[in-house]
Length: 336
Ligand code: AHM
Ligand code: MG
Figure (cartoon, rainbow, N blue to C red):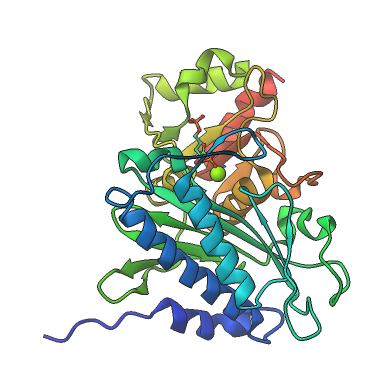
């Protein structure tokens, strides 16, 4: 019996090249570099239990958090893949205090793209063999080509994203991305080292039955969030909903997109802007959510419309099935 031949990610990228506004192939090369980096990170994540790479590196990043060794490694892998292939003129990462200017091309800085990455999100899950992810967000630079990149190239509104996506290192490894024409998911065949189109045109169900939030923070949440959580738990109609929280944004988002659900990381006492970072966590996930028919807000405003002011800015995040996010917003407004 002959096997069904699936389209590879490489073929898909080339096929869709004409969807991009500029078809110089530069964005295709950039996506290919991300594909390659993700495979290398996948290899490292998979051997985390046997190699001496578990545990803390002994450093703290700009947010004062411990960096895991694998965070550092994933960061290096992505930066190397992106800069050596000369597909970007600038990179910003959760793990770097400042953005990096990539001097590419014979005259320097000729690439028109900048990338923002969270190289290994949810890395506190590594030591316990739970899914982690990588997140990326791509923009066209707005400063003059051929000059060093500037902060303003990275501080663009989410609506300006050219492409965004994530890799989930789960029970299988997948890359899911959008260039503004829907969302497609590709699963890595580890025996061949090739991603295949396994989830074409992914969409959020309009409503769902899963809510994902760190409920340990309940007492610190705004009243609107507390009331919405009570609503989720009420015995009425299709409720109570199911509570599922991995503590890995990528994995929680991925499950909710497939099954229908809402992910929330609201503000809480002492953290008026929540925990997640606008530029390399919320914006790319919001772009994917909207492209998949879902919704992403800070409880009141569309994430993609927020005007960024700094690289590592945090923002409350409500994301998922449209009807569920709208219901949460309703509760937020009552107690605003
Ligand atoms: P990280 O980038 O430092 O890993 O933090 C982001 C992660 C998300 O993946 C996850 O949803 C959230 O932090 C979990 O935070 P908490 O442990 O406070 O629930
Ligand atoms: Mg992160």
